Length: 258
Image 1 (cartoon, rainbow, N blue to C red):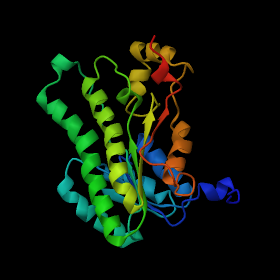
Image 2 (image 1 turned 60 degrees about the vertical axis):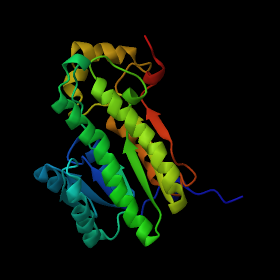
Image 3 (image 1 turned 60 degrees about the horizontal axis):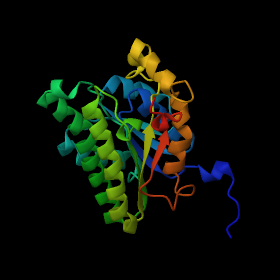
Image 4 (image 1 turned 180 degrees about the vertical axis):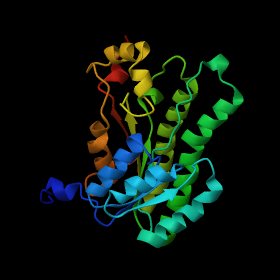
């Protein structure tokens, strides 16, 4: 039996190069900070250049990369830029996403297409570019996708979002099966309601407060509540035999049907 590895080493990410999408605010910004704090060099990818530039300045070993995840034709150049700065990207965190709430009968084609392009197609195409490069180099790596508790249960008025996040969970499993032979692990985090720029207005509304009451822990999560799940899935030492899993972090919400 192998000796016990101290937690500081178990979750250490020194030597990893991580690319985090949607890193200009909210969970993406938090993910970038956590990965950098544990030794990874981090590429902050998002559309808002000023936001990611400011965040990169405050992190050790970080760079800002302007990226629109709905434009897959730009992905090769994005990875090229990251590689010039830090070397091959070994950890991809597919965090960028949109909510686009709307009832099924009221969701027009443009809103549907934007939700799928951002939440589903971007994950597929970016992961494919990432994995093809690592396979060519014969190097291991990891993908952490961000699904949602609403990929497991449905909230009326958020149909497109629910469908997109369920697709991310299934895509995670499909990619994991095919990429395992190449030493690339693929897992996902399914957050519940977490305080962020995207959710704050809703969580403070009457409907949001009612939702919080239905969460068994009677609270919405803080971004820091996802730190442990992220580090677990990112670390090849901690989760080397873990692939195809979706880790739910939701205060028990997925099991609450009242």
